[in-house]
Amino acid sequence: MGKDGKAKDAKGKGKQAASSSDDAGGGKGGKGKGKGGKGGDDLGTCTYVKARHVLCEKQGKINEAYKKLQEGWLDNGDKVPPAEFAKVASEFSECPSGKKGGDLGWFPRGKMAGPFQEVAFNTPVGATSAPFKSTHGYHFILCEGRKN
Image (cartoon, rainbow, N blue to C red; front, side):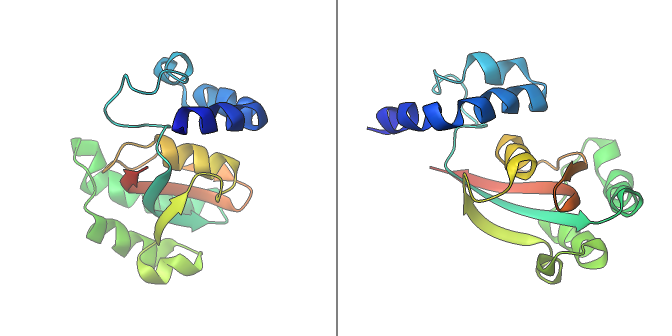
């Protein structure tokens, strides 16, 4: 039944799905779109994501926040611990969620605006996205989980 639901949704969201593989830059997303079962990480196919984020109006400020994570973890190839991400979010984020360490909790596909949703649903669990622009400003995301 899930496949039937996806086929119906694909008619209304076909352009979004096609642009998501283009935006992500990964060749895997485009060809595996209809197959679903090939990858074990559920990138782009899960129904819910648990994420934290940092939101800044100015690109310079988001880059400064991201640099803190680069210097501490990302440049070494390490994953950013959620508690450390939360400290950066509390310090830099201009979103009300910043007071909660950037925690957005679990949210379904379709709830967040275009670019934010694409990045959130295509960032591997435990990974931090690169900064990106949305209609609300500049963000980066820590994906903490995914489920169907």
